[in-house]
Image 1 (spheres, one colour):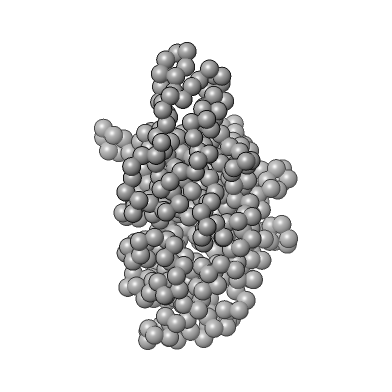
Image 2 (cartoon, one colour):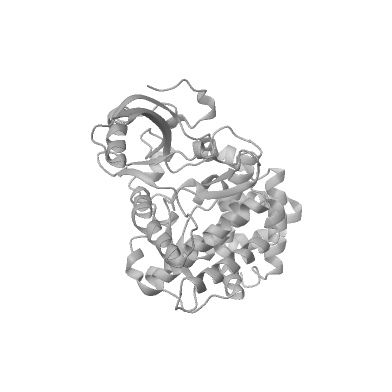
Length: 422
């Protein structure tokens, strides 16, 4: 049975659970997880798991299950993740997408191996929360233990603070380091992880990609201080997506020497992190990364550039997150040494060369995703769906928060020489 909810808070496709998400499904999953064929679900309450803006590439429900076993009566809070079934933009964009298979492989294969490598070196860092059930047929579904009762929460009303961000980059660096070791010693182990954003069949033709630069050019034309940059973006508008695609696919099609390839998270932003604070002292304890649907092997700069635009505030973005990325590198280098990495060790200078060498990806993030971040922060629209309305999207390019960011970023890019060869 579904709980009564205020539907205005949630994504429309998460208000009512599909009929197949029922006690029978949960009972089967719990029986397998608990290894108890006599387990019986006695009550099940289903509600939306997240608020509008928390995520887009899936549908999520919270299932509070009460069940009985020979040992007594118990309850467990679960998160059920599935693919969109309602007609609309989300379903169209994700149809025929490999993202669910990718995430299942992340939980069942890649992440356990990365943790094993760390454990072997005496490192107890926890990279993920276990998935207790997954299936691709007849429905694409994954079930997890809910982290909220364990004290974890999503930050929605602010950017992560310094301590929270450092811990997130700490975990990302550990993950990247372990994956570098795997790629160096057993590259075929991660060969299935080749579908990032560019692996979604409909993504490159989606409006979030195709309308970004045109909207950006219109904004440059109307903001006098920024008009001088318009010729540069006019020059790249027809081919920068193709150039960026080549970077995303280069590990598989044309690997470069001295490039730092890792298994990237792919969607490293604040809503894909859950933070835990001590209930008694209030002290910060942990961050758990979630949502691995577009994890793929590519240059480590992809996660780092994404984080600059999606998890940092304007103050941190002005120098491209230098403090956090340098901290990330220190953890990466230290971890590689501890786990016995035998390849060529990355350098801090090399990491920054990678980032600056992928300016097309920075341009993409600035023109396609940063307006969405600004619109969400300022609550310009009620639902992410409205961002795909052309008139609403265009308005987001004129938000004060976005223009402030763009002015700062374009000055920085000019200082770095990004426009000299355009």
